[in-house]
Image (cartoon, rainbow, N blue to C red; front, side, top):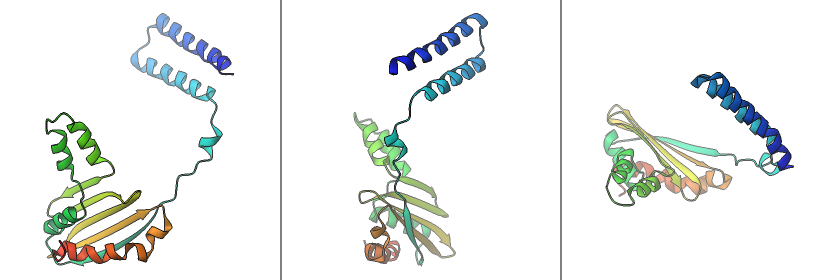
Length: 181
């Protein structure tokens, strides 16, 4: 069966090559023909039943927002350090260290992390938590205090219950205020 499909696919490639040679197509024409050939090739490949029936797990999330009595930059640094978030600057520094494996180190540090910061205004830090869950903390300025929104995402419904998250929720405020180090 594969041989038959190759025979059907091969004339399309030959026709495209002949047309290109005879007409002297421009880049846009070449891209259009390449797309058509690619589409034809994709339609000839049978879909696998095993990949059609696989469902990705559903993500659920719980979040908590609180106001902490700390400067936004100080609160963000404390939360970053305590929960071991990695900033973009740290990943870049690791990649530019000049060591033989610096690219791998930077790639490993970046795996599963997300960081954005506007010092004095807003911070967003996110990383894989445990094996497959995700913790995201956003810190925004609110007058002389800071608003901290923590979001915990998981595909395991048990991880979204209070029994699982209560210690995390109880720690975030004191960590941001410097009471827990």
